[in-house]
Picture 1 (cartoon, helix red, strand yellow):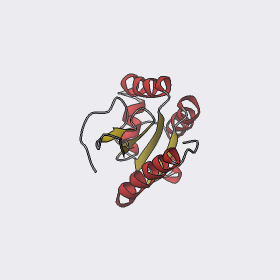
Picture 2 (picture 1 turned 135 degrees about the vertical axis):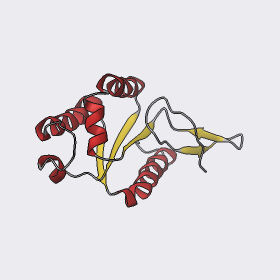
Picture 3 (picture 1 turned 60 degrees about the horizontal axis):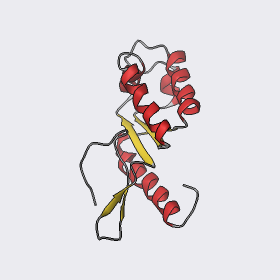
Length: 136
């Protein structure tokens, strides 16, 4: 099922059936933050940095695992400055790598046509591990 609503952090999470016939959101465990391209994430690291960082601080403090999915992105595009932002490739790469360490995020690059499958599969396997008693 799909349920639209605002999450405390991230853009997507998973729903699990609960004992009352409803659904339990995993927003307090796992979220996916999706960015359309390198220019959007560069903007988050520059113009919107305080707001963006506050979201990751909230997630870390709450113990929420964040997967950062950036569409139309690759390390080759970053290092060759194949994006419009004036943010230097070295600074963009450093920010992405530092945030993986600082906030415990997992960085995923993909093409837009694969986003839905990656979002679904990431959340599916998280929920599967949780239901099977794994260490999700």
